[in-house]
Image 1 (tube, rainbow, N blue to C red):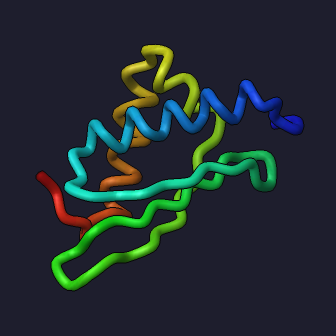
Image 2: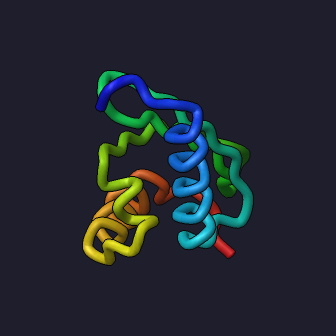
Length: 90
């Protein structure tokens, strides 16, 4: 990934927001930033005992997932869900 434009970053943030909403986390905050040719996704979520911070990564499949690629979406959600096990869900 070349240096992303502001539009790319906005699309990535929107994609992450949509995907995290789809996971059904009860409370979360997130940030997205370009890092080493990929997207770094930092998620802070409520757990049973407080909050946890999780660093996730995504490549071009992030934007593909939001553009309707069902396989990319399913793969990202499965990967992220595994890392967000301790988060509270609705």
